[in-house]
Length: 146
Ligand SMILES: CC(C)(COP(=O)(O)OP(=O)(O)OC[C@H]1O[C@@H](n2cnc3c(N)ncnc32)[C@H](O)[C@@H]1OP(=O)(O)O)[C@@H](O)C(=O)NCCC(=O)NCCS
Image (cartoon, rainbow, N blue to C red; front, side):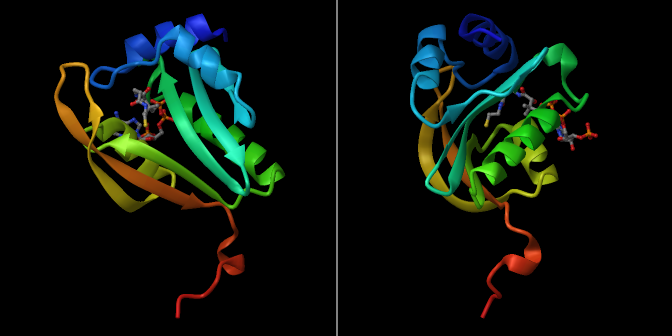
C-alpha cells in the first residue's frame, strides 16, 4: 500500500481522531526502524527498536472492520517484533476510541498510564491518551511479582 492510499484509508477510518497526511506517513516511513505491514484493506505503522515496539498507527477500512484485518496486522507485527527480540509493545489510544480500546483489550494489552488532554480531535476537542502495553515474553519467562 502506498502512503497516499494509507492516508486515504485513514481518512475514512478515523472518525474522531485526526488522520495522518500522506506527507506525515512518508516522513514516518523514511525513519529508521519503522515497519509497515499492510493488507488489502488495512495498515499498521510501528517502530521496533532497542527491545521495544511501538504502534504508531493502525487502521482498517470501515466496510472491512470486524473481519480480522487488524488482528492479522497485529499478529504480523508481533512476529516481526519477536524476530527483533522486542519484549513489549506500547501504544497510545484516545480514551473515547471505544473500538480501538476493545480491540487492544481483546489482544491482551493493559493500561500503563494516561496523558491528560494529549489529543486534539477532528472537532477541536481534547481527549486523554491511554498508554497501553503488552508483553511479548512467554508468561513463564516473565519475572515473578514479589
Ligand atoms: C481499531 C481497528 C483498527 C480494529 O480493526 P478491525 O480490523 O475491525 O479489527 P478486528 O476485526 O481484527 O477485531 C478483532 C477484535 O477486536 C474487537 N473489536 C474490534 N473493533 C471493535 C468494535 N468496533 N467494537 C467492539 N470490539 C471491537 C473485537 O473483540 C474483535 O473481535 P470480534 O469481531 O470477533 O468480536 C478499527 O476499528 C479502526 O480502523 N478504527 C479506526 C482507526 C483507529 O482508531 N485506530 C487505532 C488508533 S490507536
